[in-house]
Amino acid sequence: MIYAAYAGTGKSYFCQENPEAIDLICMFFKYINLSEVSGNMESDREGEQIKTNPKLTLRNYWVLYYYWAIKYLLYYCPEIPLVIPTIDLILDFLEADQIPYTLIYPEKNLKDEYEKRYRTRGNTEEFLDIFIGQWEFRIEELEQRNSPLTKHIVLQEGQYLSDVISCVDGCDVYKNQQIEKFKQKLYQLQNNTFKGIIVKEEEVNPLSDDMISVVLYLKPICDDDIVTDFVWISSKRQMHKLLEQYKHDDFRTVPELILLKMCYTESGIRCKTRIERNDLCRFINQSI
Image 1 (cartoon, rainbow, N blue to C red):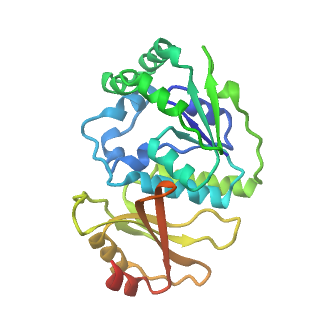
Image 2 (spheres, helix red, strand yellow):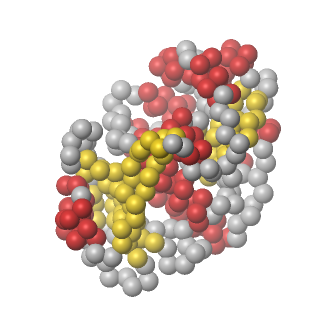
């Protein structure tokens, strides 16, 4: 139930009209200081303009955290539609893991129409340089994706996401509430928090030995419970600070440390994961 849709195809509108769908916006994963730079945006137009703000600080290996969220949601609620942008690395990960998805993009001759869409909604010239300046290359790249588990939908003139796909609500009320809480946790993440502990995001040199990509989270109490406390960790120092303050005393949940790593295999670029449980402090001291 993954829909990977090109910029300007109406992802936000589709998810507003279909509350059971999840608009997994990548900006919250991509930038460390998004909430600080964006402030209190009062309109969708301002939201579009923030995308190329030079003050934004990129999170190292943000695609790994984004892919973790995708797989997490797929595991606990595979019937829920996930709407994501057409990020090359994410599509590579899906294909390497043999996860089916539907790719939705415009006909290549609709460049002028999409430039008008972008300008109307307030996108900057920097955004246009990418999505219009590289139009032919980007569309051709999507056309050439030939995984047997990938379905292609090519939008014609005037078409949007809502015109070509529909949602059927397959979740009960409780699970919908759980998913909504999880979305809010993602969208409102200003400081990485875990059971009341503040772990501030930090800039780490991608060549530094201190850098790691890790998610520490609580395994849900039951299969239907999707909401857990979690924190994204980008350095060993940050991990040590968290573990110094954290004490797990809830026997109903199990803390899990999942290490994320991008690697090259025969099946393509993959996001490899390794899960550690139980004595996390000992693991950190010995293994990282």
